[in-house]
Every structure is written in structure tokens, then in C-alpha cells.
Length: 377
Ligand code: MG
Image (cartoon, rainbow, N blue to C red):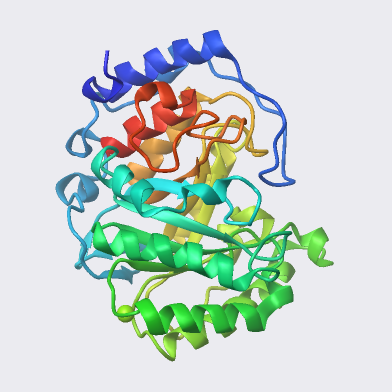
């Protein structure tokens, strides 16, 4: 059976059965924010969902995205807590590439062929280029290599009519502010005229303690927000309009804190929300709703169905609750990660081709579910 041809809810039920049979893998490195997780049963994944089939037109309470599927590249703007596509509410979905760092393994998928494949076979609306910064093999150590990888993906996305997120994939971006300013100035000069391009200027700030702050409000106002304002000013000096996405403390979970003291003076600013469904549940949806209620726009530039470590089994039921939440609020999203590392979050099995052309047998349990979600978004 081809998973992409059945209804999403049926598909995820079947995937959940596969997951139950296969289990997860070990050895992870996504982030230091791992917490314990409880795996939901397949029955809860079915009963907890309110929508009945796979297409965007059938999804639940918010009519905006269901009546405005984004089918071409148009200018993105922000109005209140909504991200608009050519002036209309909507949302897009696609995969995130893994860290670009030299020698980490995920960089081999930064190819034109992969971008073309996820557009054609996954019906992806976006792809995220996650340029590692301060860690070994990243942009600070190898700027030309890492920039070249990002540019290859951006140019392939433009050629294939995909939106593309240029992600400064950092946990300590404030330590390299000038490098970020120089990099994004270059990206804005090169690509700012293309509606495809989205700037994500700080992937995941750490928790307040790691920044020497006692509260998230302090970490935001004294560390992350000043960094963001400086990078935004540099981008806006070149590119007046493309969407800029800002991180928040606690691995981009404290969107409610940022929303209480938002960046002002610039148009088309949104805040990234990151979740891992095996760890982050209703409490984080409540924080997201609080941020929306305060009037800021959100974009889920990174999510996983597994635990926050990037490993473990896919929590199908909780993932579907998140999908319903994102449809309800027109939240666009990118799944972590399009990579073949042996860990739960990887969409690809070890050894998958860096040229695309994957069959379903090349996809992991997470990859099968994610492809189905993206294809039917
Ligand atoms: Mg522009």
C-alpha cells in the first residue's frame, strides 16, 4: 500500500502500528534539552483528532488556511498574529535539512536533487537550510563551505518554486553577532529580491541559566532581543520586506515571553516556535496560544515527532494534536530532519541517497509520517 494515497488519519494509524513494532534508535545529539517522554498509543492518535481526512480543505475550525492553500510563490507579510501569503492567511510545510556542519553527515543532503525531489515527490512548500555556526565544522570555522551549501539549497529552491528558510542554526548566536550581521547582509543582497526567501536569524537560544540570567524575560530583553534587533536592522537596510523569524529563550519555546516585549519598528517579523511532540505537549501549545493572543505571529521552523533530544519513537497522537493546532492557527512548519543519521527524528534510513529518488523503504517511521503530513498539508 502506498501511504501517500490513503487518508492521513488512516495512514498515521498504520504508521503507529509500524512504530509499535519497530521501536526507536539510540544515540542522539539534537539539543541538550532532553526530557522524558511517554509514548501515546495508536488508539489515542485516532480518537484525539477532530479532522477526518488528509487535505487542507477538510481540516478543522480555522477556515483561513482551508480556503487559502498556498500553491505558488507569492510575497509573505505579517499582519497582527497572522502570516499572510499575498495578503491572505495560509500556511506551508516542508522538511528541514540537518546541521550543515562539515563532517556531521547531514551536509550531503544539501543538493539540488534533494530540493527537487521533496518538491516533486513530497509536494513540499518549503525547505530549511540549517547552517551550523559555532560548533565544529560550522560557519565560523568553515565559512565558505557552509555558505556554499546554503546557497546551493536556496538557488535550488528558487528554481523549483519552494520557499526556503535560511537558518542561522545556533545555540549561542549572541557570541558571533558581527558574523551574523555580515552573513545576513550578504544573503539579503543576493536573495532579498526573491519572495522565496525567509530569514531565520537565531535557531534556538538556550535557557536563561545558560545565558547567566535568572528569568526568561531577562534573557530575552538583555540577550536575544538586542541580538535580533541588530541583525534585523542589517537585513532591513538591504531588504525591506522578506519575512524575518526570531528565536526566543529556552530553545525557542518562550514565545509568550517574547510576545510580552516584542520587537517593534519593523514590518514582517515573526517568532519561531519549536516543539518535539514526544516531550512538549499541551503546556507548550498554551504558551503558543498566549503569544498569539498577545498579537505576534508564529512560524514553527523546527518540530519533531520524537523526544526533544531528537531521538526516541514518534509520538503519533501528540504529533497529530500539534498538526491540528497548527492548522487551526495557520502555522507553517518544517520537520527536523531530512537526514539519514540513526536517530528517531531522521526522515531517512542510513545510506539513503543524497540525490533523492527515495522509495518509502528509504524512509524511517518518522519519515513516512512526515512525508504524508507534508504531502497533504
Ligand atoms: Mg525583499
